[in-house]
Length: 301
Image 1 (cartoon, rainbow, N blue to C red):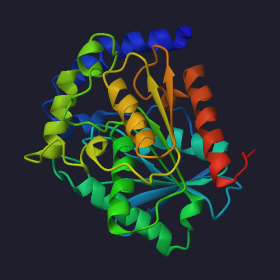
Image 2 (cartoon, rainbow, N blue to C red):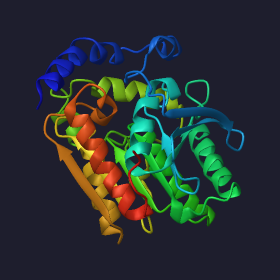
Image 3 (cartoon, rainbow, N blue to C red):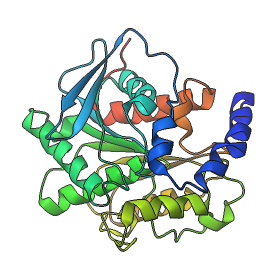
């Protein structure tokens, strides 16, 4: 673990973890939450777009091919997050994987509870198909709640009889809103960002009266057969570690191909910190390589 990652983890434990464990005004938190990256390079172009009625943003590195796209869903417990908070990881992943990125600014809770986010994700994917993108040139990616949303999208597409994307990469995906994983208790103290209290609060805002084991809310309880090749990255000390482990096990048990990459002591969704810590940069490279293999793309210079 790098010195920078250690210092950042300490800072998160003393600040963010405490605030999230008692989050009583998600709208106010949303307004003051900032981004995680540095200055966006001049080679990056970001363009707002209406993706099937869903506010979204194209994030493109100069020279990105027009036929290959990553559909990206941000994290934030379904209550916060937007392009400003996650644009840095979007352009990095696009550059390294050789694809343009469609960043989906899906509706947030508590104003818009489940299944609003799933509906927005599905509509954005339909829109890509309508624009002429072939499913075998589409990847889905997401972090935390966005990772769970990416899986929910794929399950929903399968239920609707719509061809699934070619590949998926997920960072610390939140796929079990019922909080049944053993790491929820085992890693409650070691996780430097999230706690069982925070997870419970986020789930209540998003779910309302919905059963937390509803398959499209907690896709770890869904039929996970026929999903595309999937790479899952997670930190070893996260409360959501079990979510990643169980997801990968269930995809593989259903006949799919899922790979789990556990990073020692890394904080929740550490790839989003690529502008700050070396481990984040390495994780981006690993995810991009996985995407290039399946999409047939090349890294952009």
